[in-house]
Image 1: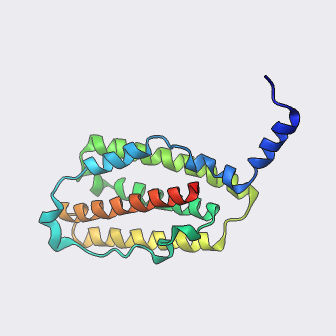
Image 2 (image 1 turned 60 degrees about the horizontal axis):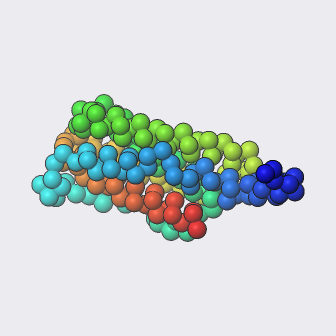
Length: 185
């Protein structure tokens, strides 16, 4: 049974609003849970043996209230977080630390998420300008990951330093899930 033209037009108009534009981010992404599971499997050293290496990386305060983000802002923040995680785990120092098979699968999953988000960002940029708050948040994410990189370098990329970073990245994934959940509401 074919839908009347008026119904098709109404559906088309509905999908031009921000909620539908972001549907590509909020659909069940290609293995998001699997990516998080792979991250969990990457643990090499008990974090208890690395307590002396703990540090507060100071997750950006501007990101702490995910409810304040506009959908385009949230897409840009999600993309930046995943891009920085991908960059961090793509380094040669990371390759020397983690199980290569798990790391490859983890990076492939992150890459797929990034491609999905890039598609969304391109669509959103065609419709509206990226809000200034989005740029500020993206810069805060970059500074946060720069701090993580400096920490790893200072600790000479030790297995305990990577384990502390591993715990921090798990926190990032929890934030990402919370942000995605807020966007679905």
